Length: 440
Image (tube, rainbow, N blue to C red; front, side):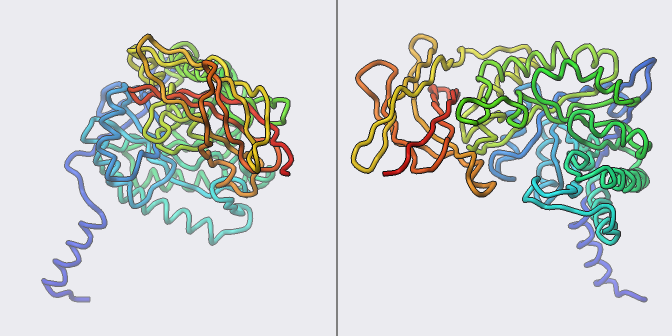
């Protein structure tokens, strides 16, 4: 069909807006070297020293986010999916010399993850094709951006599949997607991401086109990861695509039936030890191609306080741990340290219930601390409520390190946080659990 010149120009302009072009694509390859592999960007060796990225407030903050992360020694970000903000993130990353492992979201196979979505990989052929086409559209849109390091397909879909038939069906579909992505973009490696080594047997058997494996690992078990990959039949290089302290899902329960959160020192030490001692030898040997610490986000919630680099505008110990892991630089001045958080008793005052709380924090001489308390109700009805952290009213008592804290009107045990922030914006936390008394 013939098209007039003005119409053709309009079409070209619209295409340019929808499918922007960039001056210099960076080509990423994984090269076999002896018994291992080497990740290369434009022919130069590259090790991903990364964090997963949610951002601190949307595209308006991406430039500052990337500048701050670069100062920590971070060179790579990982996302879980693409959206309207992806182009702005890639631009900001490129400006500050960072690269991005771009996530390509594939739907989980059962409810319980990401808004309780669930997809049937065994029976829903139309839905599979829709996901494939949507994935390819994103690859074509961003493949020429110089900040793109690699494509990360899916996140813990095998973990979140109801049975073996579903896992196999997903893996077979994944191979189709991988082949299509590599046909659309031969300039960047493709990997898939799952928990621990659960995906490795399925990837090796059903997804031979993958260039590498993405493994989400938490806690001290990272020291056993390389052996676990080998035992699972892994024959390809791998990235640790999420990492941090022991997660709630594997933590022991306390006397109130709530999961015991590791202390801030343990969270810090796990990150530094994990990169330097657990993964370092495998980076040198060419088995591990990089690490992504979870998570750069400003969310002040249960997940953010447990695993995040930030909580609101404050930096958590994990922030400083990432810097020490990647650069060797320790916090200066030293961070405050929580020593003790304990509930000594509960009393009624009118219709309010108050707890006597001991909260001891040490800090360098001359450091002033802003102390506060909050709670989280893990037995709430909805996912949003279960992740919410709510500030509590508190009053300082006459005895040093003691407080009166007004308890929430909830039924059942809840998590109590003691929070201390110094003048530099560093936030440290201690947790315990409280069995809420029966309402009068």
